[in-house]
Amino acid sequence: MSIKRTSPRSLLVASLLCGVFWPGILLAQTALDIGATLKTQNAVKLRALPPSQKFLFLVTEPGDEIAKMKEGEKIKIQEVKEIAVPFGKDIWVKGKTEKGETGWVYYGEKDKPVNFLDTTKAKE
Image 1 (cartoon, rainbow, N blue to C red):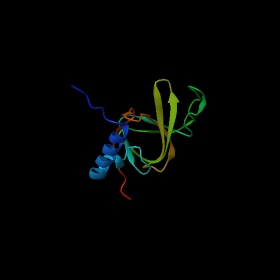
Image 2: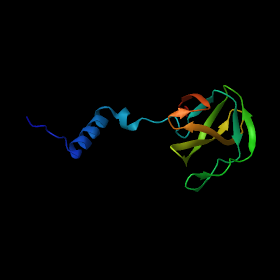
Image 3: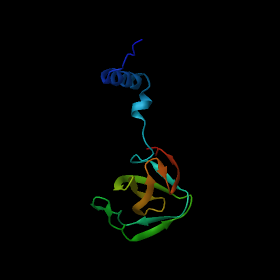
Image 4: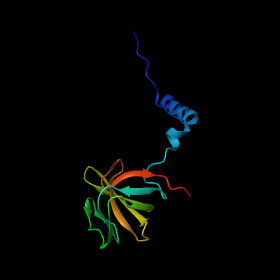
């Protein structure tokens, strides 16, 4: 009995075909798209700057606190920054609050938000 192996080319073709028939698979947008709205699940500090990468996993402190967002407040994403840390990446989001304040907030990991409850695409 012989076992037939699937070539990498066959897997690529199958993946592309799935994307053609189910375009949502390849075109699915993440909750961290520019223009998306995030809703806080706890108090979140709005900062002047996110931390910055220095060397390997050395990261500077985030900027000064501009304001505090209360639980349930929303922020509209303007920019997303990933910072390499041991065992993953921290995600910081720049956005504008409902009160008109602009700054950076800590999101968490891409698939594990720490400070945000739910996300919805902004309707514009």
